[in-house]
Image (cartoon, rainbow, N blue to C red; front, side, top):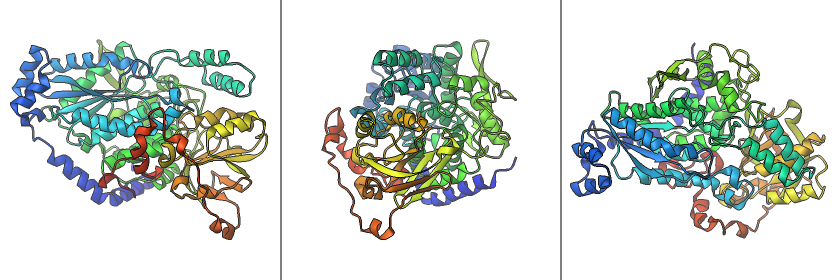
Length: 612
């Protein structure tokens, strides 16, 4: 199948736009390559002795030889968060397998892993987006010892995988294999969970009923099973060629999960400079891989958070993408997956119906993915149109199912749920924003209603409880951008807005903040740029202004007289409460440096990562 012309055109546009920055990135990566020598060979004897002083004698012998590849393990393990708790056992598995194939492995360093599910709606969420950049820097610290010839990155959730990947790309000369932990087994139905949340928001059930419902949903080790940012991360790593085929959604603590971890260690050794097929990450993450990631996001109805993260990842590789690229690709990429919140199924159901191997094959056959890319499996994305299975106790790969196991969850590209990817760019006199409409019913995609303006999500919740929002309205929540308060997710708003929509009111959200990958059915224009703190025109909106949000036409407009609008001054806000407590004091520099949402909301002052 030949490439779809839009896919080709967008890719070529990105290549041209990125020509200078990509060349500079590749020059840096190539300059660091050791040309077959192990990385540690450049260290002095004193440096080297420090680096393996605590290793067992047998490992010391191998490291002294300065010939065998040494693999770094960078992990987001902690035992508080279900998604990362299974990673506890992975380093021992990797180290043992590395020795079997003539390599060594060391735990190079840990990175922090915070959970948006725990911090959602509280002050700690204001550290969430910037934790991605902390993770990238922590990854760099782990690899800065110049002891490693390839790296295995262990992480799963929202900011962790993008942070690990940005950090890995700073070491473009090193091969990289990403190793997931997998989703927890299925709990109660997602619809049942959402219903209890709405009942609690209406005051019809108590906290005890809510907690029992949440515990029945989030009940064991592994990733939350809805298709939010965490599981969108796993999709991305697979479609961009950094996972083993079929690895994303295998449950933790199973024989196949452990077998895939062992296989990942072997592949890391194979693609090191001392292995049989040297594959640095700078050759894997190129313009075509980034486009493949965007297509995968659109085809599966993935998280809007990746309109930030993909852009940031791309910049870390010297590649410049913007929301117009997402919008144009969305117009031709079919939605072929329906997983909650875009459907009733969870990721376990999706995986059982055919999973990522099915998705990749369908999109390749439709000319909507680049096959001519390099992955950790070799040349060609077609190798990732497979599923993993156990053969004699080891991970093996076979063709993904030819037919979907459930066409209410997974469909062929020729018979999609929707002809487009459900992600739109909105423009108008308020700025630029993105909206995910794959979970929004057609009758809710156009809202024209008066603005009700808030500077904090808790103000809206209080107004809802007072009964002041029983009407058609557009909630405008501003001063929520990266410079203002770290751009927290505003997922706490989903239950009350959902209640009002179900009562028959026309409601929508407009914000310079973020919404979770778990949100969907209420139309939400998010990531409004420029943000209010930087003089964005969202700061001009007043209570009662008529707002038109048209997701079909890509319009976000305040319907006021043009002269009146131009003459208005921007509202200022007291942000002192956002500056202190829960560690926010330490992130003042991040807030001051953060780029716009469309540029990845990055806090790195680096010429390759500057604005568009």
